[in-house]
Length: 177
Image 1 (cartoon, rainbow, N blue to C red):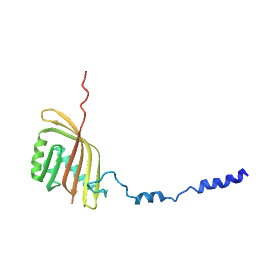
Image 2: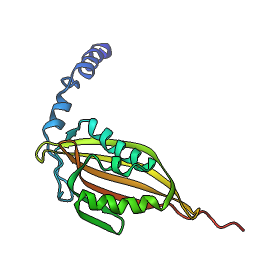
Image 3: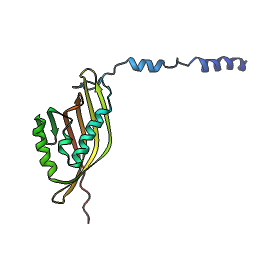
Image 4: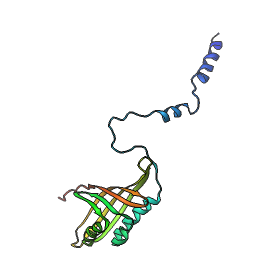
């Protein structure tokens, strides 16, 4: 008698609790989550064209090498640059003059990239490249320092229109006793 009950229970356990393959995935794809905060910018994005990342990375490589004219060749004629305690909106030529002076004060600069991400916003028709990296430099007086950067760069038609850099300072090393 116990064996007779065991067979239906076993069948129920094996076949009664299965779900259709992909049914859970289909549910999560159609449900729009409720975010706890409103967003100011579109969250509808897709992977972007990696040639835009190459454009931005080439700009930075030329800057590191001291080629300021080359570094800004892929900037739009009118550009916005946002940095730590620095804001510029105007003609590319004026921004080049500012950065020529800044770069001229440096003996050496290097950039060590963690990664980058290229995204495209179809509703805005904008491509953004986000970069994560450490920059190290030595000025002409011999003082060395470094910062961690997260840069967001907006491109349209292969030209940089907005360059928004954010920095994180590294903690001071512990004092030697």
